[in-house]
Image (cartoon, rainbow, N blue to C red; front, side):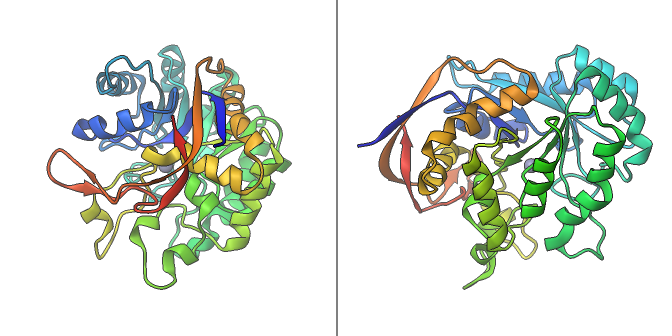
Length: 343
Ligand SMILES: [Zn+2]
């Protein structure tokens, strides 16, 4: 039986939600990750340091006994975010600021309507070394959903990287060859996270043979050639790409609906599925750097000193997870076999 031991990984893009849901999501992530960048798209969103610290405490309170899991907090950028908000966030230990174009995803209605007025805020972030995390899609209704990421690069991201060259940027959950190649063309200050679903699946897995709402996420799954390019860049070992699950729970009834929610809940199988992906690519030797080293190096944080071990052993991802109120979540890859198991 094969086994692999890694430096304990971190998840650089994650949705915990809030309230009772934390009792489900926090233990699921803390079982294998040491830290996670926690998205601020609550209702209402986390827009200042004080709210971020309160949210952090609620997450810490939901950790299993004995866990030293550490949430890394983010602020939700709005048209009103000020230079003073950024300074207060840095002083409070907030790790990053998240940019959602208005309407891009779950709870993004409060988000920014234009980037140029925020350039003074970005200059301050560059000065203080605070990274900007970007959901990189245009959201106008004229743009085809499959072209939104590419258009965002051309219209917004490329100009931003030119205008504020000192700003650290994480292009979140990239889904296209265009995004991968753009990140490779930028300086060391621009990196990207990649989810398990965008490495494993393409739009056929969403739409062929019947619509599969549990594979519906945003940015939407793209054509197969984009998935292959993402696989190539992680296989290359480039330090610009690191682990970010975008694990995002919605109840079964919210997903299986005439207007279903976007998001894949992958926390219960995340590191195992990444191991399977790297193994299938013949690149298991590149997993540790992607999962545990590139992220901390980009953020300027220490790497974790603990280790985890994965063994090659088949197990079936549960069909559903029961919540406190009788609702269920269908996890990502539900009912399917995963070949690697956390020991
Ligand atoms: Zn997300």
